Length: 395
Ligand code: PLP
Image (cartoon, rainbow, N blue to C red; front, top):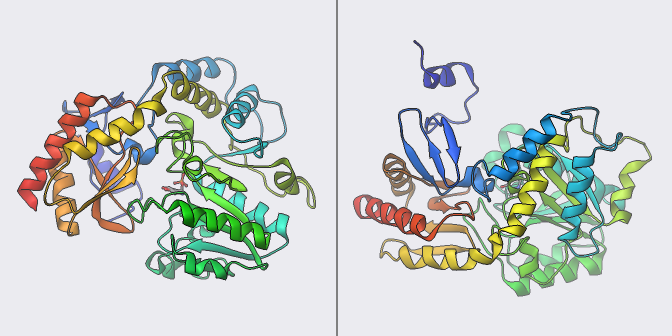
C-alpha cells in the first residue's frame, strides 16, 4: 500500500525540497504522536499556535457544541453570529479601551492585508514602512513587507511605496514622515531569530508615528495570547499601537485571525465603497467558539502567570558553552548556534529522541523554542536534557 508519506510527496504541493516528513497521528497537551508509536514533546507549538497545548478539552467541547448548532452560514459581517460577537467582546475586554472593534479573518496574512487597507484609507496616504528581516505572511501584500529580498524577487512586482527601516534602530525613525500611512512591525521580530526591541526604541517609534499622523500597526501574530508573558507583547513596552494584528494562538488550534483598532479607524472600511473588504470564511463560527474557549482557558488557568518562571527554567537548564546566546521574551525563545548544519542536525536528533524543535526563516543559525504555555517543569527539564545531548553531539 502506498504510504501517506509517499502520497504527501506525490499529491500535495511542497514548500521546500527537504520537508521534515514527520507524520503525526494525534496530539494531546504538550505531545505529538506518530503512527508508529513515536512521541514528541512539542517545543514548536505548531509555530506559536498551540499556546494552551493540543486539543484542550474545553476547546474540544466548545467546537462540538458549535458544530451541533451551525458551521458556515454566510459571509463575514452580515448575520449576527454569536460565536463571533462573544469572542470579539471577550478579546476587547483584554485590551485598552482604545481598541473598540475587531475584524475577524481566516489567517495572519489576511489580517495584515486588512490592516494595510484600513491604514491607507484612514490616513489617505500610500506609503507603508516595514522593518528589515520582518515576516508578516506570504500573500502578495504581506510579502511586500518582508524585509528580505530573497523571498521577494521572484514575485515582483509587489506593492509599491513600501520602505524599510532597521528594526530597533532609532536612527531610521526619521524615515517616517507625514507621507507615511503606517509603520508595520512585529512586537518582537520572530523569524529574524527572536529580536526583542528596546523599550526606548518602541516608545520613540510610537512618538514618531503620533507626531507624523502615521498609524502604528503591531503584528502580534506570533507574540499574542500569553506567549511572551503578557497577554500581548505591546503591554511590555508601555505603548498602545493603533492597529493590532492577531492570528496563530488566537484560535486554540483552529484557523482564525483578526485585526483590531478603534471604531473610528475601523469604520473607514464600511462604505465608499460598501463591502470594500469582505471575506467568506473569516471569523468562522467554529473557530470563534474555539477562540473564546481558548481565551477563557488562558485566563482561568492563569497560564500567563507561569510563563516567566518557565522561561527562566529553560534558560537555567540550557546552560551550555556552545549556545552563544538565548534570546527571547517569555516562552518565545531562540538558541543561537554557529551554523545551519548544527541547527539541522540538532533538530533531527531531537525529533528522533522525542523532542520537536525547529529554526527561523531569516535566522537559520538559531533553534526555535516556543512550547505550549502549559508545558510542565518536568517536561522542560526532559526537553533541555535532549537538546544538550544533541548539542554535545553536533557542536
Ligand atoms: N506575521 C507573523 C509575525 C508571522 O509569524 C506569520 C506566520 O508565521 C504571519 C504574520 C502570517 O500568518 P499566517 O501564516 O497565518 O498567514
